[in-house]
Length: 388
View (cartoon, rainbow, N blue to C red):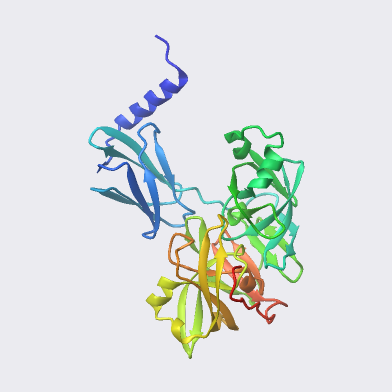
């Protein structure tokens, strides 16, 4: 009797699991929920054919709590960096779904030899986005937006057709899952490309912060350059330091808003891809007692995300936005009462605020450093009552 390689792999995987006494969770529904860090929820569909069916957490520095919840049962674990946890979800008391929680390894290039310091010029667009020149698969010049609110590499659908499918043939998974990008002297190989409807003005795609994970990134708006360090440079005392809160594919910092001499500290997602100043989460400001109703309403508008979903917002004038010793006054703040774009409760810091600070993103010690630059006192663009 001859067995195929795939059959042998399945049998060996099944044997491996059968040798361990794995925890068993029961479910009468194929759709379950995975909750990471007690906030981030993912709808997960049980699959008995994949062995193991793996859920990978976001960047993990110390530990992550991960919970799988079914309609009748649940299991919760704490994962250390690079740790795995295997268990079985028994679907309708007959199908064994071998499931794995996995935490990625920590990246850190501080001891890499030789020490590297790569400089990438950028254009700050009128829409407050960071635009860089890149090359796709060593032959196609592409303009990409650096989006600190995203992970991975993205191209708009027209660019995917133009560069990956010029003959109009059917796209394969290999077409979008095995691509190289070069930006400056840095190269990323075998990258998955995610299709999006739209991105920064004048760009054909974008890339996220994790392209620089394990490194230290300076964004200098005075010189319009990004400097990528393999080893952390000396950081001036002029910078204010903020700890990163890592939330799956995002990172956040804590800042303060002030109204009538009262301060409201909260979480802000660091999002250079968001073109405006602030977007405030309605549920979060209600929880904190932030006096939205007492602030003047500047405009009511409709915004769009990268999937062209409409997000109705109203804009109020926030008195002060505080980053340690640095204070921005009379900042337009948009209230999002429609949904949670990040998948959890957070405010957003956008490009019109972030461009006012030369920034250091330390993805080794997981901290953000901010120092005012020549744009600090620039007037804000005020929205009008129209779709934007």
